Image 1 (cartoon, rainbow, N blue to C red):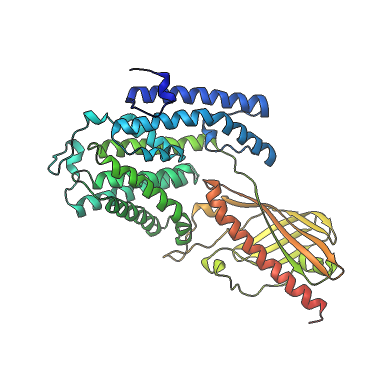
Image 2 (tube, rainbow, N blue to C red):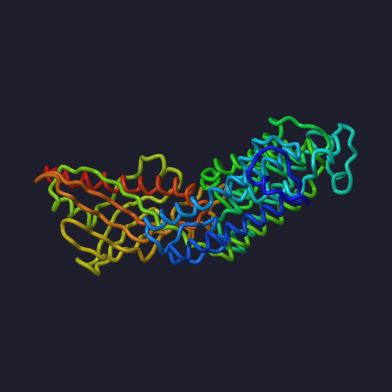
Length: 458
């Protein structure tokens, strides 16, 4: 093992497996301790290894979290450079295209990428692939034909999807990074490796097998009544993209060696470890908020009367509520002032909302004691109840704020504070914000209609 500090700075040249692993471990250890010092000394926070996946701190304000993340990013800059340099050299030594260094920046996928680069031999040691390669060991079980190898790749990955989905959701009670990032990446990677084990396959073919594999996995989860159609469709964009990324890496690895059985086993072990780490770390979800506003041609007091409780809304015309997403039907209130209890009836049940602020006619704020199911899943069966319908999407607080624009015009703002236990948070927040915004609009438009109609004597 030849260690040179220049390997951390200059991207030219190559680096061996032992050096790559050594520098990777050393740099990570140094960086982790620097981040731990920053977290404790500057922000009075503990910092654990798994928090690189969940860096936002629940007990810090938005501004404090922003400053914390900026500090971590600044400290990471030299390590990012050295990591990219080492990865480029290792790719070059293994005969892989250097643009694959982009995987260095993909969470979870970069762990599999590091493991693969640590396993691959140098280019000079790689056996030249030939169409008549016999393979060995478990590789002999892989069919030589296009149809046979593709069928095996799809079947094995569908089986893996069922096993890991049930393990993550039912055993660990989590919809985490391993499930939504690690699993589709692994499916794409191993599908390409199995499909191209005996013969060279084109990139488009590898991508097709990966997408068929991820689609079949979703279909099987639907058939065994584990998931519904809508949630699978919502997850499809990120699952498809990651499967394609993994498949592209697998496509390039086919030029190296017959490593499919070994990498299939390694990827499954890593995936299991990632899911266990997230379960042990038990990351706390971030509290999000969604605000929607509308102008109403009525005085604030008139609007207030229709905010506190409102009559039954007509059947929804919005396409999003045709998919099974829960939608508001009416609101009722028991009592007046702080301590009163509001019931907002949805298509799947009622929100129980004790009033915490009653500032008539300016602000109505309430907590949430009970959340109904966020949706009714589409399914081929009469009814299913996936685990994500219980406790993975929860509203915590809401409010209506009324601002007088003039004597007869009011700006009505509705705000919901919520969190979800689905990872990556930012991806699932995209969907949840859209849903909550449409719920707000349905209620605000109804209040606008009833308040203006009442004012005009309709």
